[in-house]
Length: 188
Image (cartoon, rainbow, N blue to C red; front, side, top):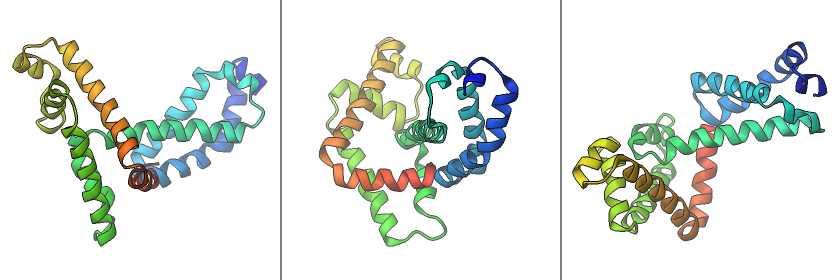
């Protein structure tokens, strides 16, 4: 780790060769997408290299690498899950070959929870979010329609996403936890 933290590319290559299959396996297990798993594996090791100075203090590299990998995979999946335009992706996630009644019910519950959260958004945030995620409009289009600046629209959508996450955590902790685990299994 010390050699890598000092910029030794050969030492980094050794670590990559030793751990890349393990990281790829984790990525494929959670994302169930070969191309995404390949991309994430490369991104994980690229992040390690760009932040190699931090490796100097790492005593348990395997644990450190697992944490970095899981965080990056989780972030990637969050982007997909909370983007309601990914309905096809979510439907495919919940139907491996033929949807089981449990998975159909989980998906419907998840949709209801999100809709409930969206319904509780303040009016401006609700409208911005619905136009963005459900109508597929760009920030500029929404800004023109709502007579706001694109930056304000972007802020509204970010605040709406934060509100939805917090709402789901507060109002449906049990179901959300189960769904998050299912999604993590699928995407991570």
